[in-house]
Image 1: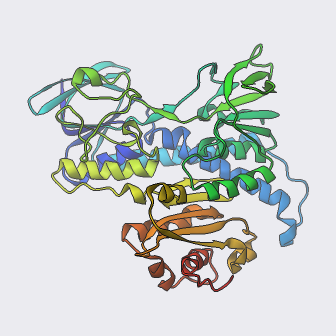
Image 2: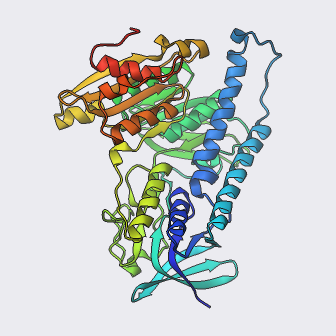
Length: 470
């Protein structure tokens, strides 16, 4: 028997399940196919959510050990119960994946567990083969959205063994604190998970091929963050080209060797490979269905997320661009609206990026380097958190807000924040860029006192040389 739907979404991650819910709201009979029983994709299962749970737990442990006394708290020695921490992380993940499944049911969306493959089309109908535990079934849909996401990338010479030498997936579930952890890659994944295990007692060495951390971030913000992370104990080695990584002996022998070009080999207990992510576009029958894919595996789409095959669309990490859950969600909603004949538009300049270290790093819009390269005239306004009353009260003194505004129109072009709760503070900047606000608009907006958001207002004032508290 063949099921028939108005829309079939392949992938139940943030882009896929959001697209399915929006389509259901538009009246489409919708189904989602995912090989995992738990909905939510990589983000919920082994990505965004579990990593943030561990970041929160490990930061609370650090705060209890090093900051409680200053607040008048008196406690005995505070130890680490790693199994309890991991259990909490797993409970957070389970609660949220069940929540997504509940949303799918609430909206009348069928969730099919299995592996999907495009097998053909007849007129306006696409045919998809779904391999399940019970065998293979065929599903028909007038439209298909591919939202399969991405998987961790690796490097030549690195022998991943799913244990001692692994990716972020393994690093979210270590059974013990590594005595020495080598992280390959100083992007947001490497720095976040490196911070977790550093806080829990591991000696962490971060190897980065480039001469800076956080590629793509504003250079001044990245440099400020690097100084802080070094003070926190991360051994960051820039300009390090990793030639290979292998595990010595059996799994019980805590031995790995990382070879670095022009430097001594590093021996450590575990290796985390965090060098980016690659699209999951294999095994989907894309070539047979006439879906164009580039040489890196990214599906090619137009401005309405349509592929080269009629009735097949794609969103999220699998089409490239910022590999962010919220970017995939925006594309999911826009794609569903477009299929229904609605307007499709996403302002990619207003997609924020966040690194959930402590302090956090958050950015939206253009960096100073991009403005210089484009020849765009701009003015800069910066303001440190240590001059803000709320920051003093909470002890969140590190970092600053940086605003880039057009020198002639005063339009906000980019906002970059290094500081506590930067990921929350950036929302104001996203709205400002989305609505074409000026730096003046920002500082004429009342910001409650005492709050960390006052640093945003002061940075906007600083664009015009009018900062009050500096």
